[in-house]
Length: 166
Length: 340
Image 1 (cartoon, one colour):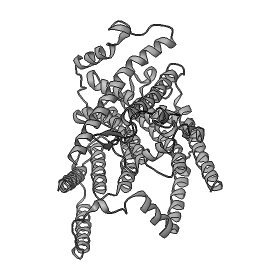
Image 2 (tube, helix red, strand yellow):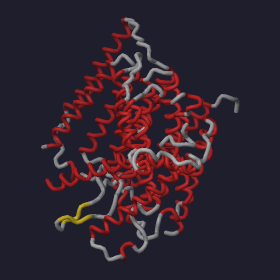
Image 3 (cartoon, one colour):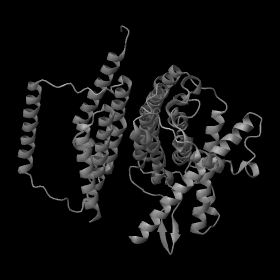
């Protein structure tokens, strides 16, 4: 199947750019690799016929968040290779945290029946109509509450950004 | 399946070639229009009426010396203009260029991809359009280029919001995110512009800002920033940046025609009694005429209005256009509710 090859390609791309994001020396390269990861994941959504999710993923992550990241990195000119050796306890803490997260993930996915999705193109759940129905019918209250959360965050950001006294 | 693939390949190539040729000749038309507005002739040496001027310009750009700053980030320096060009060409995929054509009794769509999220696709492309400029400006390792890139990105982020909000009113009216549905609801003279003039105005202003055209051409403001984000670029890499601006103009004209001016629809065109293929061709010409009209507006404004100051630009974007767009969405919602 052709879409299988696309799946493997996108997965490899996502893994590669994810790892490169960590290994790059320049912050700008890290940001761009992370953007590439988001695009690869967006491609996976399209393979599952979740077009709405894919495009919103691209708009929100690649189009808004990563652009702001890039913007900040450029504005602060974080171009210096800041790799001062970290203290030993930081490294130990990082290793322990990483291993624990890995164990949790393994534990979760062990009991999970991982298999290829059969006929992904017949699934309609990722299309905007179905998603809208679910959001506005079954999860109306959480959806509206989260919008208030966003509004609060926005007002907070404006308040913090204001220089003069209010 | 094989025929469809072949057809789509041909269509994609045709659309790509069309965008490139239109962009190429837009440069000539721009200079001719500029000449007209400034009461001079414009280029008229290469061929009749300067017809070969774009070719001469292209050859010049290709053969110019390739210059790369010593301190530039080599890969990103090349990636910048390439990405700009790529993203500029992407939007044309969801634009319906005409009604279906019939080949061997089978209907074929003149739209590359009739995805049911066409409008969101355009939002996405607009929102990632800033990468090419930012990467190029940063990789040049030049103060002016960096300033130009930062200006460009903050301008594009600001105007993107108002642009998306203005289209939301159209989506609410149509009840669909598919470009084809939106066009099909504007049969004859039933264009969206009559219902949504404010949304169109906001969209038009934002389109100027998104394509970095005057009066919003602060990213390449030559009196302050030498050449803005493409200060360090030469030869065809510079050509790509300049060229993508014209492709963006063409595509945003197409989007405006599709969303607000009925796309390929025109009154009484279906009464001419044409065969399906001739009908598709005439419809395409109608769309093209609309796009040309918008191209002319882009040029008209450029050679008429002076540039904004940066704080004026930000004030207009955040304090005028976004509240107006939200108001427009609100009014549209109320009207839809009352008409139910």
